[in-house]
Image 1 (cartoon, rainbow, N blue to C red):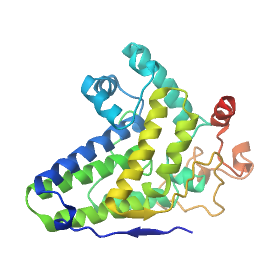
Image 2 (image 1 turned 45 degrees about the vertical axis):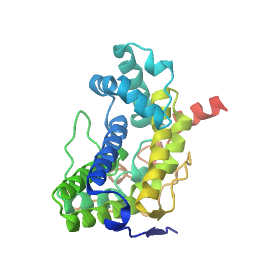
Image 3 (image 1 turned 120 degrees about the vertical axis):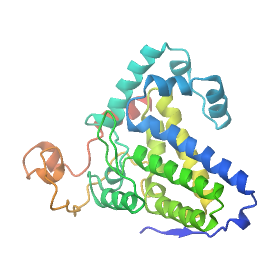
Length: 282
């Protein structure tokens, strides 16, 4: 059973000046984007250079992030290759732990969280624009990017002294947290921290978890962590139907028939690579 509550804090009750609230919104948006960059695709040279700058490293250290030498002391080209391999094992190939809400909560791709998140984005005028890789609407990088954009809009409303629009947007940010990332990213972050072999993803998992806790406290949102960091995610008995206008393919559960392959007969999503890693560390 899921429970979620939202606490109302008005603009005047926040204790910050308008300019301070603008700065806070933009600072939080920057953290959202930085975290999103770790999940949307393999880290680019530009992204890694920005993270390894003296200013960024000092800020991250203040947030409790402590990268090991495998991140700080490795030449950029070598680091990119290492992280591309780690990204694939963790998030892409079979046996990993994809950072996707539907997978973490139902054991299947493109289930109810996928469609609900997509509708939420459309309601606010957003749509997915894929980069090097196609991503699901309920992938953690997409959810974090959406929240970053919402915070930028909130900052703009504050700068325009449009308190009513800012207040409405703040409520929508709280609602999105309660309906989506609040249900799963904290638990998932603990799993990522346990499963990662490279300190970059281990520290990103740790930061994701602590930042999510901080944001939920700041926003006054109380929501159960349904993910729990569990390694095995049971497949939901009832699948959420795809849009009738969308084609189905053999790459997803809906496009398969029972007996097509071994995965169709399994009751939990394959996390075999991650299981081996975690058992090897025990």
